[in-house]
Image 1: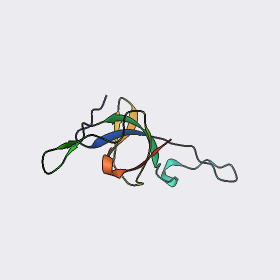
Image 2: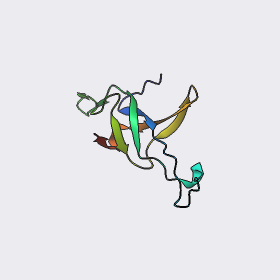
Image 3: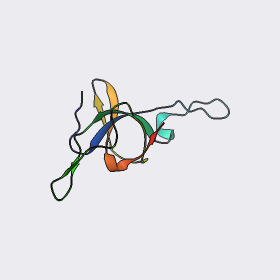
Image 4: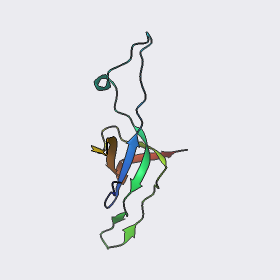
Length: 94
């Protein structure tokens, strides 16, 4: 599995199939980028200027909301993931 470094988080973005009112399925390039996902892996945290380590605020399995254009898409073992910095996470969804 991917092991993120520093304050990075690996997400499995949720892809909901979108249909128009008339029942037409939209192509992937016509859809908005997803903004929710599930945390798959978390880095060890970030370091402050004084050398103190700050633990991540999220853990594996958390359902999160993230910035629309955040992160980098990667493919690993045939699955697509999104690697984002912890600062790009907006909220944990309960």
